[in-house]
Length: 174
Image 1: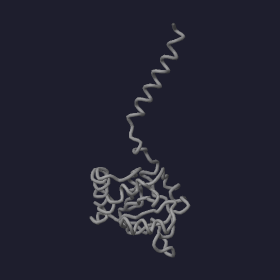
Image 2: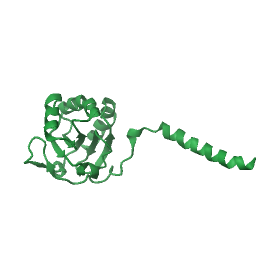
Image 3: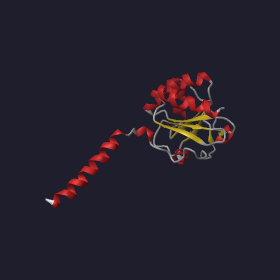
Image 4: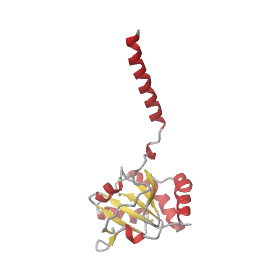
């Protein structure tokens, strides 16, 4: 009888861990970069490959970095939301075109609208690695000092925009 108690106890503990894990939201994976300076980079811009973009250019501003790609289905889902958000002028929105062909990215923005102040090109994915990109789309709120304050994994939804991003941007701009 006692020999069955240990396996039964282990089974109950494993079921408990599974039950807790199933209640967690996979989009709320904590990022080790939140609260830390945004990684520095300097990459070409999408529409002008002779011009470079670096996060240091945004020093003193609260801004959003949105990682996107023309091949990304979820990016198409969030894009109308970003277009509407950009019209409000709440804060600068910079795109990071991730592992994409330049021509495809330009064509995609021409077709679906361009909400970005500019888009930088991360063709080899190195910038994405430094930012801990799990997959596109991902959006980062970066404060005036260049510190990442929020990371949205997956598409920005109207709810996330209204309840998390906009209030945070307003608070950081005070």
